[in-house]
Length: 362
Image (cartoon, rainbow, N blue to C red; front, top):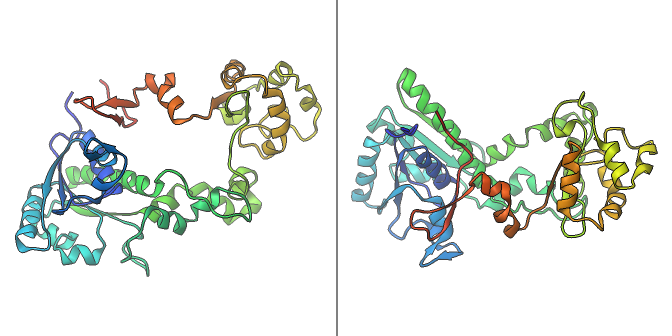
């Protein structure tokens, strides 16, 4: 099958995680990606852990790419970049406007050479405002977004999100914008600059929470109190914690008949059925329900002699939703992970790479 972007050429001037993730995804869709690095290399080449002599992080983010080392501080280096830009459909840059202009690789300079160019600009804080010209780490952008307040406990220290969510979501949103720009160019012609900030990306995925907290009197439940409650750490079983829920949050809508009463009978929790604070479908006392944390001790006492796998089987058999919390090892060995082929070996078989979560078929 012909890949979607088989006739698209991308020049990637970015380093680290965010921009290279975006260009990797474009490569996975069939684009030719030319990665342009400084002579000393992308700083991600120094990241641990190592796969032989190379960074496993760098290898994972830069598959499907050709590599070019250029000294952009020299006229000769800038000419190489400008020549490549003339041939490219897409350029990805993660420098500030001032840095890019000094290197003659900003949108204004390159679109003059190639009027149909799609230019992807990826920055921590956008193009305007007092922080626009500042660089930032993943943790700095998380702090600026307020996201660390969504972990930890009220009054306690903020806790960073373990994954590099600002970098990842910045790259994913840039991919979305570039694909839309390529489609518009195909229909109407002309290039454009697609600018994405990592701070804006984190705000975008906080849409529901920000809306709820802007007018909390019109909302109830998790979307208002979630940022100030303890993390959803699951319910402990005999071997490892799990998460579970009943009611409309499991799919099927508010008219779906909940089997939560049968769940209570199976585990000797009939007292909950007479509890005036528990609703009859279990929606409020399980999962993200407003009263779920209040019943932690009750559930865990009933779970202490059962494994997570046994409880998952019981809950799913009653049309609830459940999954155990994974360790790294159990995640890789999980039958669903393997069935979806989310991890794939490289052609050389020397390390495993993450498969992107899309599948095309005819």
